[in-house]
Image (cartoon, rainbow, N blue to C red; front, side):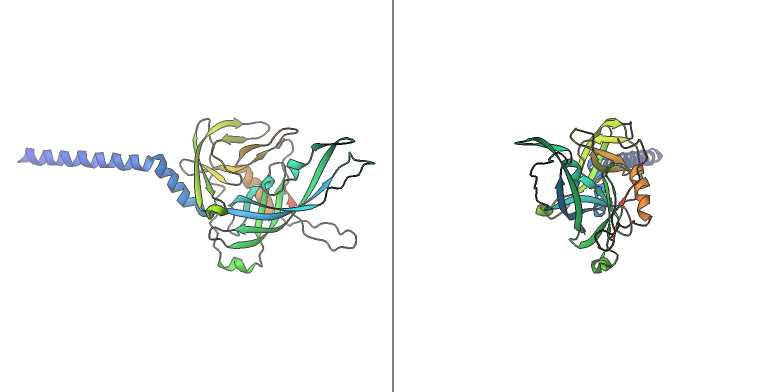
Length: 292
């Protein structure tokens, strides 16, 4: 009888051990881990829209007729909520094309001329996951790091019914070559702006003049995570003179450092031609020698 009981107990123990292994494997399954990250952070990824007023100038057309009319263009891009007040970070170049336009040369009957562009953003809106559109302001820009920080207008009536679910930038991680990563994104308006996911891996680490991470499966303005759900950073453009920009992940620690400057008061533009002063977006102070 004792032998029978011992056999049953041993069998039960083996069954429990096998079940534990199966559950553990299910939890470690890449698909399960990816879905968990999506569920946790999907509401932190939103869309941002803005109308860019673009003015063109050149110093190479002296004595030549040059008349490129001012134009307006609407841009939309994804962004990531990083503050309980609705503060959003995104890739500046996805809303402001001035850096990609300025410096280009064009052929004319009198030779080549170089074009510069100045962009003013207006009608800025944060588009929440449920479709609510919040009037917003660009409160700070860092052109060197390609960052734009956007905050809802505090007096917007739409703000009363909105609950923000930001990502915590201090929950950050580092990565190594070939590490698996997960990017949380959101489809565009054609696909109803639904939560989306991209799985990829780290392809390169850029350590000088500052840290950037290259990875597959990233999206501008969106957060990329390690497979255990810690934040690597936000994807932006890396610019270099006379070269095409490259998508890179700016580490979360760097985003956090720049975002801390948003709390300082915004400067105001100097009045010109009798016009009243207007609030302007603050320019972030990137540490010298670290952005180029």
